[in-house]
Image (cartoon, rainbow, N blue to C red; front, side, top):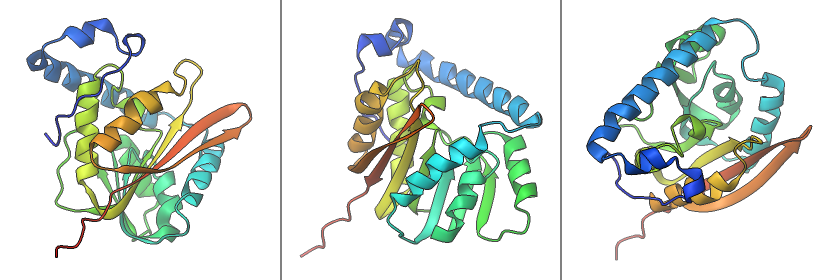
Length: 231
């Protein structure tokens, strides 16, 4: 476990059942949730077609990358990379990229599609349980956070965010994109996402909105402050 901070959501955003589940019973429920999510993603990526509306999604990713102000990163972590399109977009901005996804099928597709690339390493992994000694000066979470059971398990979600923040090097950054679906709205960003990253020691540097064809995304850029130099 990387953190134990708790974020309180409004009752309308958290199902009452999970607010009452004892912690000892919550872990296997979360594990089952992750197993089902992996199963669903394996089925999705085994099918043919444009799974995420690629053109539309990549337009907002380009907007998000513009928030990085042209910085070049030593090592980037792309969480929930899918078939690797976001990681591919980050190549001009990074010397190395590690791209992970819970779906082995997605990782296989990404490796096949970008077989000749040397910048990106694709790994099948669940960010909630993944362990690494590497540190990254940029972590990208592109439309990923709502797959982590955010409102179902807010305390566990907050711990997961703390784990992610622990992978960030000093003076590193975390870029979050969030699709504002009509049934979810944007309150989750202000009530859970931002407080979770702030509780993990990051500072919100930018909060911008991207709109296109009646759809909306919130883009957040967090920074991890460097430690003050010792006297």
